[in-house]
Image (tube, rainbow, N blue to C red; front, side):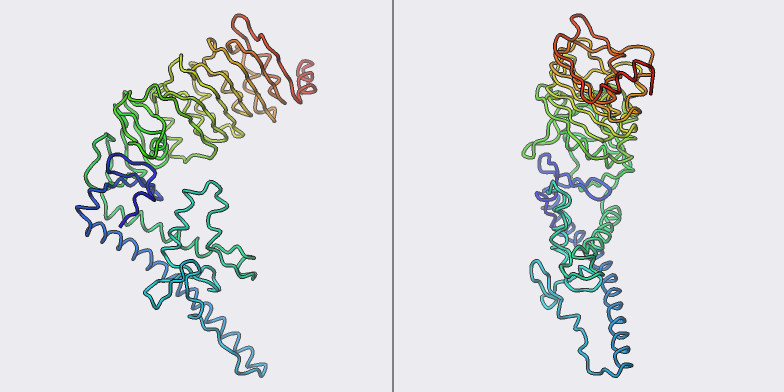
Length: 431
């Protein structure tokens, strides 16, 4: 049976959301109980398809080893050396994790192309799924690599077994598409269907008149086609609480929006289609670094009186902020207390509505001249609110010539770091 508690990333009532390779599976405990045999058959079907694919790969590997052995013995016999021991491929067939053996009905797969060590499908599956629960991705997969130091085993780092298992696991999605309902459109509500549903990149998921957890929202953003309707909001995620609520239930519960990895092309398409101010939220912190998710800022509906403790945006690539730069009207990010903008993200400040903010600390940094070129080239100045303390680092110093304040202006310190030569070259019109 599906291990729902372990594999799910969100829950609602007795339904669980599972992230598959190319989609989101919604399945309830009620379905598993009422259709136990059917679901079990589906799972066994998927598992058998995976094993079938791996059996073919395993046989190909073992045939290759046998051919090498025949060639080696033939070369030795030509040199007059007879009676050398032949390699017993079955001797190593034991799972190096759980010690399962073929005699016990366990299918074992080689971890390298020399078949030095093996692992069973259950242990391979656990190791693959462990990636979702390990912060350091480099740690994931270290358990199931061949420990033999040979050139073919890539010096104690051969991931052949893990790689082939993940390829075979790709069969799960195609099998689910034939076994489960994969609708063209899906209206997400608190009343989830009483049957298993697979939402894919071809499924248009409508989000309207509900409030969902930020974790569910981000997965749907990556895996499905999203249409945002009226009265839609996102809120903080709690593993022990339902991920779907009536709209407006948690509007006074600020949460953190954090991301430091790239998003899928589908996610960027979804963001581009969203109308400005269409996603309601109450945020305590923004921390988005080198990710296209930065582009979602103008799409968020944040009340002007919302207090944001920390706003941090960094973008070493311009495409991370392309959607923001298209905005003609300034967008609201609430009353920000502390702000840090890095590299191309420095340009985002020109699109924010900050006139009424009382900013305690503002830091701008740009390691390359190109990062601030568009800001420097614009004719109109941009406004910020009252700022107590400002820091300009590297090429960000050039931005100060385009910055204007409201009344009282900056009543604290202004610091420059690594900017003396850059700033004075700019004032003399030099590059």
